[in-house]
Length: 300
Image 1 (cartoon, helix red, strand yellow):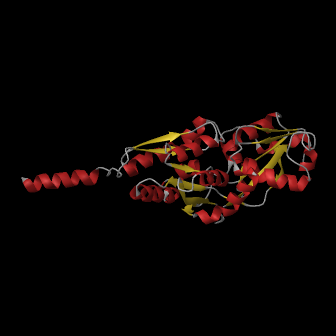
Image 2 (cartoon, rainbow, N blue to C red):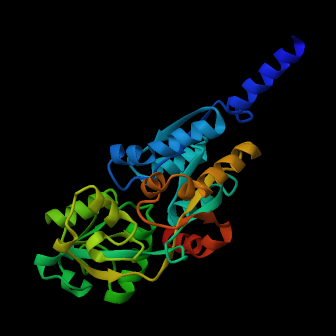
Image 3 (cartoon, rainbow, N blue to C red):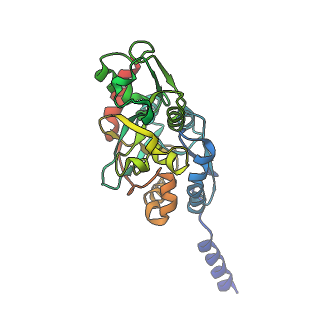
């Protein structure tokens, strides 16, 4: 009887997922850039896999802006997030001990760079930045790498003017995020703006991954109505980060889950990774030193 009881207990223990040490829930932050419900829908499969992996309740958080995720990581109310490079730089500069980068989205060509893409409506006749003089220009979020930091540094060098309203562009405004910028340009609320894309594949598809691809998949735009007018130098894709204070086994399990997601569930990976890509692969802090320095310079 004792042997049978021991066997039953052992079998039960093997069948049930072991609860991760010292945590009762796991909280995943999702950057802004598209409407909250779409963000939650695209990451629901990840939430379910997280519960299965850790044996605790997993929750998704989709704050209205990038800073909501950053502050959640700094304050310990969010455990994991896929940040942009500039968002990671802000988090690191605020508290170097808050998070650690573990993985990066690698493109189908094996690289992990992407671009800030300037775009306008095709019927506007705008084909280059110079055509936007005295017109309205839209940034996304002030903590976005491609939606603000990099274009705010590179575009002034090209036009030999500042990004202040009235200096070169008639008005420069923040739309609130990538999706908002795409919709604003498409609707004619701003004449040009910037967003992010991997630059691979076809323009008509919104490239292979990025905000334009998300917008196409959501039926928000027809890329044939838009035209690319500017492209940044390559930008390092932002990291998947975990709070450093998490137990080691939790960090190991979540890193393994994210690293194996492309193979485990391709459809889920597509939703989490904002389009076609190869996988999430290892990355370290060193990859973001250039962006951290750029962020420091911008804050002066």
